[in-house]
Image 1 (cartoon, rainbow, N blue to C red):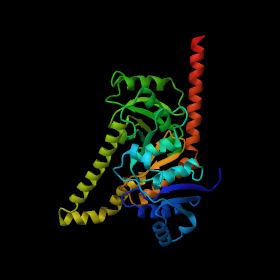
Image 2 (image 1 turned 90 degrees about the vertical axis):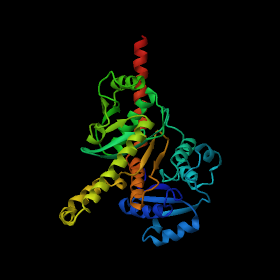
Image 3 (image 1 turned 60 degrees about the vertical axis):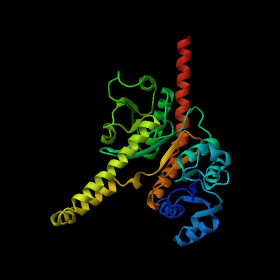
Image 4 (image 1 turned 45 degrees about the vertical axis):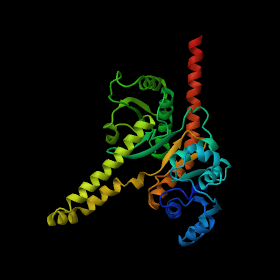
Length: 349
């Protein structure tokens, strides 16, 4: 692999695009000096914005894409008629080998549909999943699926566990990640049939990490496991609940220290500690959801993030490329499939 990594950026996706994309690229190139970017969007507008970002010009290439994907656009519609959009062209750059990965803050459903159509799935993967990571008491935890698959079979859950384990090793640098299935209790008798069967299958698999069984909702912030596996409906609800709770706590803290003169004085003395807390829980540090299971690196940034958050999402894509996340996933899936075939052949003798 060349030392230089090129990432395609959908410059027209996101609530505050293209500003956050261009400014985020400039932050990312300082964090990752080996990175280069191809920006897709309105060429004239992007050129003017890049010129205002000191030092960025030599790290980017601009390609004109006359259309953007609307936030409320239907995935099926954009797959049929969205080939002139910045999102499509950015994904296509990965397919053509002109970029090693793509990052977009645009419409999630459209991005996933386009990526599945253009990049295709990895061989051996039934459904891609959305994975991201967030802070816990023990460090950081990966969770998937976060919304790509509302209903999941036992096969899907097993594949999510494999993909999440690889993501934890690649992005978080955890040597032997622990994996748990999210359930309504830790007992083996609890949960629906898909969860029970998936647990049995995972116990039989020789994962590079360790499958520990079922985990509950309060195990997620406790960091009981490194990878939490669930269906897209539950995962998305859990993620949005966690985000809302974090905002609620921050609002309560601000309100508490505004209540009185002495509370304001107390805040002055405690400010450094509260700054550390704010930094630790800053959602921008954990921005960037990976579409795992595609034959290419595709990262979804939160649509409402700022330049700092978008730069973090770019960093997720760069790390997946630099540390061979997709290659590792392919190798793991192929090895497990071969082991399964050998087991079936032995059993038939």
